[in-house]
Amino acid sequence: MAGKKSRFEKKLKQEQLAVYQEAFAMFDKNGDGSISFEELSMIFSSLNVHLSAEQIKGAVEAFDTDDDGSVSLDEFIAMMESQAVAKAQPSFEEELRQVFDMFDKDGDGQITAAEIHSVMEKFGQKLSEEEIAMMISEADEDGDGEVDFPEFMKLMRGDVAR
Image (cartoon, rainbow, N blue to C red):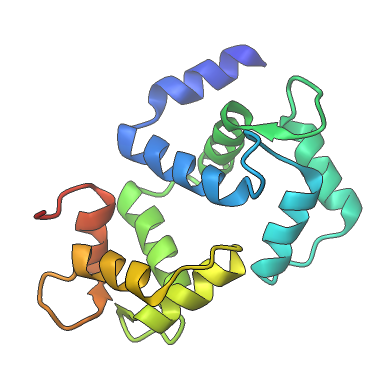
């Protein structure tokens, strides 16, 4: 199956690869370069996705091509791409919209500091108010103290004024 992984990786746009790498880093709680069964269980739980231990084990086994019991970055990318292909691969903008909507808890079209704090905390990331304010100020072009979807897209594409 290594041929399929290479085919997926070649098709990836740099933007998609960056999103996958960032997601992988968030999920790899202990920073060891792989996502374990335990980390995967925590991720699903924090997202209120209730899967049995067998389902999670099956997901790991399905993409664990080197049989080490965990999912490496390459395996994660192959997993994400196979899921995207299976779902008629959404555009990069659609993927960003899904991520944006995950942060926009109240659905008002704006990401606030409180929403960033809440989501990052669910992923085990404890950010200070200053760190969150810096994140917002990096993307907040209109100065309203919140991030709307166009601002979020520019930030994620690396197209923000610094």
